[in-house]
Image (tube, rainbow, N blue to C red; front, side, top):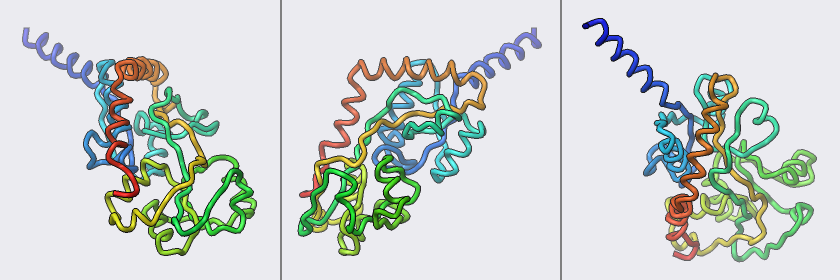
Length: 251
């Protein structure tokens, strides 16, 4: 009887462990962040989609390069959230879109700026964040030396250089940029900036699950089912609206 009891405990423990997924994450408020409520809105969507399938997410926060490497090697089950590209498709099962990201060029209001094509950016002093992919056209023009681009350590540094007049334009996800400006800058500083309505990049962000981890193909199917249920419930739209409502440049 005692043996049967301990066997049942072991089996229940194994079943519980099997219903957990270990994911890496990074800092990109308000979408992702270790100290944010729910670890950020994108993390919340991922966790709740899994929860609808009876799966608990165990989050680990690391620098972005390390997060991706750990997931790619199968040291962790996956990572959230990333742009889709062919290189990542070779190493990961890629989910349906979790959130949409739109990058815009921020500029000082005193600097008359207009653009429709990457060629319109020639001659401008541009900063961009190191390691970020701003879309094929921008990346190609930068690599070819057609654009004057300085890569910086983060979005906050780029916005500060913009305010100081050291650069002319800085591309950043609008929601991320607005949140950063509200958290780290004064209202007077925010009023000095604007952004151009033509997006540099508009694309979806996805959960990645490593192809090195057995069972991840089926796990991704379950996640996508949970994500669809969450989206149909209207909660994803509600969560995204909540992070955008208080944000503007003028307040």
